[in-house]
Amino acid sequence: MPRAAFFGVAANLVLYLNSRNFRWSGEQASRATLVFLGASYLLSPVGGWLADVYLGRFRAITLSLLLYLAASGLLLATITEDGRRSFCGEMPQVPLGPPCPRSHCQSSWPSPYCATTLYLALLLLALAASSVRSNLTSFGADQVMDLGRDATRRFFNWLYWSINLGAVLSLLIVAFIQQNVSFLWGYSITVGFVGLAFFTFLFAAPVFITKPPTGSQVSSMLKLALQKCCPRLWRQHSARDSESVHLLPGQRSPQPSPSPQEDMANFQVLVKILPVMVTLVPYWMVYFQMQSTYVLQGLHLHIPNIFRASPINSSGVLRAENNYRIPEAWLLLANVVVVLILVPIKDHVIDPLLLRCKLLPSALQKMALGMFFGFTSVIVAGVLEKERLQYIAANKTVSQQIGQDLYYAAPLPIWWQIPQYLLIGISEIFASIPGLEFAYSEAPRSMQGAIMGIFFCLSGVGSLLGSGLVALLSLPGGWMYCPEDSGNINKCRMDLYFFLLAGIQAVTASLFLWIARHYERTGHRAATQNSSSQDRG
Image 1 (cartoon, helix red, strand yellow):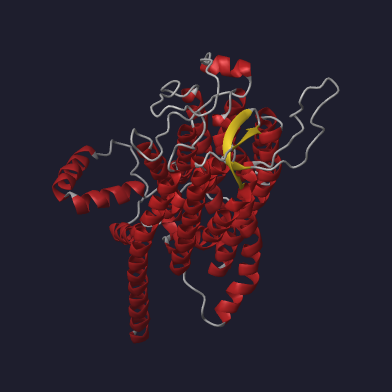
Image 2 (image 1 turned 90 degrees about the vertical axis):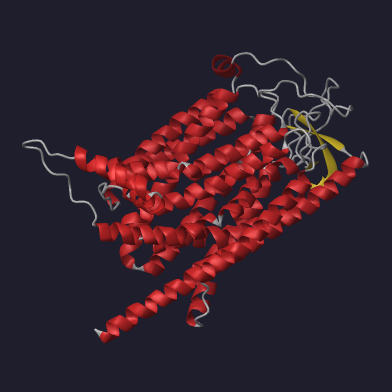
């Protein structure tokens, strides 16, 4: 349910910010969506650290769901006119019209309306979602950890499957209501999802395996990093620490901490794992386009009606309220359906067969394959955008009403976006699920929470880098600079942005292959040395 609520906010966020309630430009709405998605992953270590040190995972999840409820309520308040007036003030009345015919037009106002309140609500939602994600993933894995590594692998497969089942529920129902009925009803359902998740989690508490907080080794890792990088600064810091640590009479000594040998071993593992996860960041730059620029592109393709009502009522007035269009966010279902279909086939048929034949690829090999599918997805998106812009250049456009807003689209059907969504869905199966398995299984037991948090954090870095790239290319002279378009992207060169992402992904995928090969060779050498030492013993 939390993931259904998350998709309920993220799937149509570009459309919500682009609507006449706020009138953000296309690049402003895409950038805000990428910031929200990035922060929802980037903040994962915060929730994981609080759970490890103070709260424990169960209480951290409970408090995060409460924050989720409050933040989604704040976002809901911005939908009503009274709520916007209370939280945002009055909006300048600038009509949303056709693209400006002149070559040098200025945007209506430099700062988007209600930006402070909306960004606050989105960042609080991101903090809650990131804490739930990092702690719920580890909390669920703790329930099956004693059953062996194969059970852990299957848990992550089915965790991802259930997440996408929630996405189907959200996209089919909530996205349709948001686009064709009202955002008020749509976001009210997302608040209901969070409330249902909160009470369900509390009622199921007696059957969970819960563990108390055991402390965090983050400070130890930082000290070791300081010791390796800046030895002179480290000596000054340790000298101050030794002078300040004196026990008062009757004061207890601190609880025993991990030994220096254990800290060093964990630090070495972290140093080995980090390059693998860092080179996955450009994949996340590509992946999060699915919920930002892919959506923006879809709004400027022809979206057919689901059914047509009688166009004229008894008074002779044109009726549009029952002329429902297929929600653009439904294109995300292509990604989700791929995951829902392929994960059970992979878990029950493909993986057991490859395991019997001793051909099951490693997690790193699967991640490299996922990068390739992500690369092909963004290439397909770039080719489609290039074709779309040719129709725009020839002045072959159709105007379409989506919700209460008017868009000038190319006559290409939106179904042409399906291949790029299918490819990004396949990439998710091979990159994201094995990435979770790699982060959890390769980490030492005492650092699993921290490394899972780092994995999600780097996912957020990818989204924020994508947002930063959009912002950079939106400066005067950039490919995404089109201030003459109020909510439209017909004067932008988003195709070149997609091709640039593909180039970045191709270069870093090559680097990932080299790092992964070195990592597996080192691991195999260490396993061989351990087995030979045991034979001698």
